[in-house]
Amino acid sequence: MKCLLLLSVAIAACAASVLKDPVQGYKEGDRYFYFPGDGDNTMHLVDAEEPADLAFIEEFTRNPANNAYWLFTRDNPTSAQIIGFGDVGSVANSNFDFGKVTVFLAHGWNGDGGNTMNRDLTAAFLQNADVNVIVLDWRALANRSYTTAKGGTGAVGRGLGQFVNWLVSLGASYEKIHLVGFSLGGHLVGSAGRETGGLVRRVTALDPAGPLWGRDSDRVVPTDAQYVEVIHTNTGLLGYTDPCGDADFYPNGGSSMPGCFLNSCSHSRAYEYMDSSVKYNNLLANECATLRDATRNRCTGSLNPMGNSDLSKSRSGIFRVNTLRSYPF
Image (cartoon, rainbow, N blue to C red; front, side, top):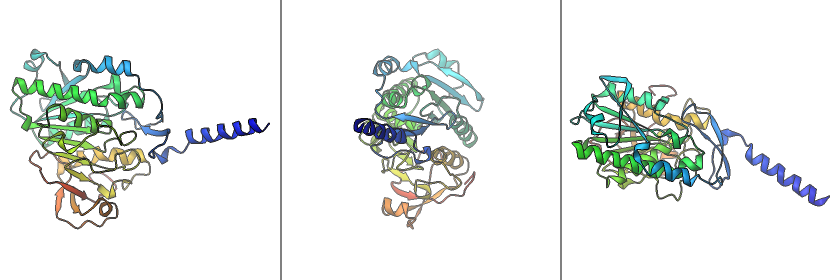
């Protein structure tokens, strides 16, 4: 009887941990947590101990051409032209312009090339300037379990970096490359920049994913590009907490965004802030002496724009901007 009672208690405790309120998000060391998919922002239960499908990761990432590369320009702002990795003809027959800036966009878990983040940022960058926008669609891996998608993020990023290197070999310039990624995609574009030897001009990581990334060598770091900017909007839960770029922005302190009641909303604010800043360059942040000052709203240093499309940015440090509740913030 005692054994049965202990077993019942253990089962109840396990169930409680599995079914905990999804609003709570992730805490370091949790086995079970909820994480939103990029596609519809639905919270999905994740088992941190679920084995990653290493065979699928290897099969998918061994050839970077397994990813899809969708080109958008002002001549085709909503209808993608597909660029095949290694297919020079697909570039020659497209609207790609080697003389223009090229912005790459990378989604996160359960996302795809046509999700809200990609549509909004594509429109923003094309409104702001006459550029090439290439959306990386890696849905075949991104829509596997979180542990599998996370386990393959670095390899997908290296494949994207090889694609960038290939375009440069055809006449593109590292000085005109801007890699932008959200959530898992924030780490992915870091790996892509690293694959180029850090030669790309700018990497922007939008609330790079936090769960299981604390000790991962594939996470985004300052040396991944000539300039690495990180926007943190859900620290300690869905997003990565510590500074990991040349410039780290903690809008509203970095965790709970105005107008949001769920962690998934705060997480998504990163690309919404990026969208607004690319269009209007309206989010000016004060420099902070420390991360603690950023979280406590004690930043009085000189202003530095968060986000935007400027490839000449070079200022490093920790920054905070206080935003409004709704777009354009």
